[in-house]
Image (cartoon, rainbow, N blue to C red; front, side, top):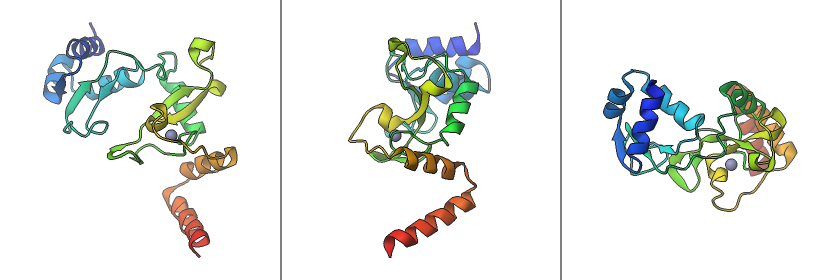
Length: 182
Ligand SMILES: [Zn+2]
């Protein structure tokens, strides 16, 4: 049984309970347990939460919130394809323009996380191909609140800006700020 299998089994046996890093290190039997947990979450779609997702959790605590797998993370989206989609979309949610690590507007103690979404759902025959995949943030993924979708041109621009070096992003920000506050 691999470390990932052991961790999956442990989480499922302790669903709804707070699990500590110490325990997971023992279960995983490896120092890289964090990577295996990321795989369970990102590749297998397990609903594992950390302090970044839930205010009640402390750093180093994990919680499997439900046994349901998130359909947005199909195992068919391999890490390489996932990275291609993220890069193409400039690490930007295609529905609202959020980037990874932006504060969650509904809960500033959490950070926005990016998911890979099937435009045509797999249940309706949508494939795991580059044109059927897009980046959607955790806020839009949970369809909370009213999402104001930017136009396609705005989305493309935001994606380009997010791919640019930070210094260039700042320049754009300063210029736009000037334009819109004068
Ligand atoms: Zn979004």
